[in-house]
Image (cartoon, rainbow, N blue to C red; front, side, top):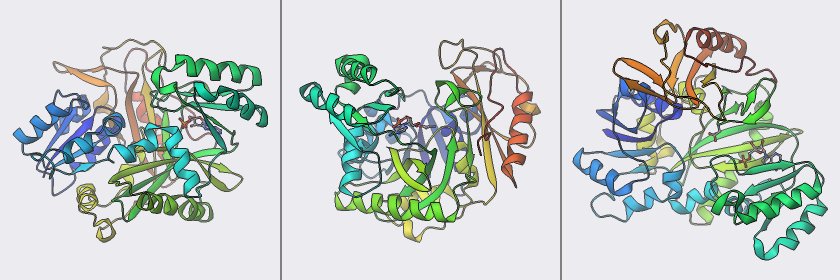
Length: 422
Ligand code: AMP
Ligand code: GLY
């Protein structure tokens, strides 16, 4: 098979690494990719949101499958674009159509879906400029802190958690006034849920599903979960507190009704569902859906998938996932993200990365890197993810930290406390 993978982060390098182990893979293209994917696939200078160009490339290169890493091409309708075109409608796309992608693309759509299907989630109210007063009234019924979410995609920045009621009212008005652009023209106000967060990753063909695993990521830049939010500074899978009983509740109360809900609502869905959960005193509540794999969660989940990932992708495209072989490694995998100094605020790019060849015993997934001649340079805020296996979480982390110390570039920073709370 010739596969075209869209995206350029650590997630996509991990996908490329896993696809390379498949006996079915003939040629792997990554668009646009990074210096890591360039070592194991052919990087193509294509924008994942330029659908006509992707079509042209797919036809010229006998692409047999398109796998979509990030959410925006899905929310923009890449799958629908393929299905609507006679020349490419038979090339399977992994990732939901536009309707299903609304689970991530619209918080309001996701909340309505969860309430319709009795999936446990925080109470909420959806507010626009036209019912702002109702928003103020709803805020008054809630206890602090107050959760305000821009309805649309806001590059992970559209959620505010505010302690003071008056401040929450002011922020609500500001969000509706354009603080997050068009994404905030509708705002979802939510009840605050107190607990420990984790995520569960599910692959579905729209009829059946496989639960890959759960993972926990570390979003804040600073140790002890302090400072600004980032895309993710590290991750662990499995999650020690997510034992049989809790995961059974997740399956029964969240995963099954989600997959059944998609069918009842006639929402076609072939792809990954990333379910962000809060463990509230042993009961799971859904915080959000994403319609893709997480980053850096992919860097700990895919190393645990023992089965051939292209077999699984093919089974999804043919709606034969129920018949597919599926096995996960029981070992723990941890990842530690090396970032650029200054991230998630301003940072410099173009720093030479050295000592990558000294890494021993870990997997190195490039996130924001590029090639310049024979050098590998930093090219983003999140630079490299160092993933390790271990019989225990502690052993895996020790290996990730040891190798994270070896890799070098100006301004390197990583959190040394991943897993501290477990
Ligand atoms: P989201 O983009 O919906 O995942 O929200 C971003 C982050 O805000 C989540 O990862 C949580 O840490 C936090 N958050 C979102 N919704 C809630 C909620 N209802 N209660 C508590 N924390 C929340
Ligand atoms: N690590 C969180 C995400 O991928 O959205």
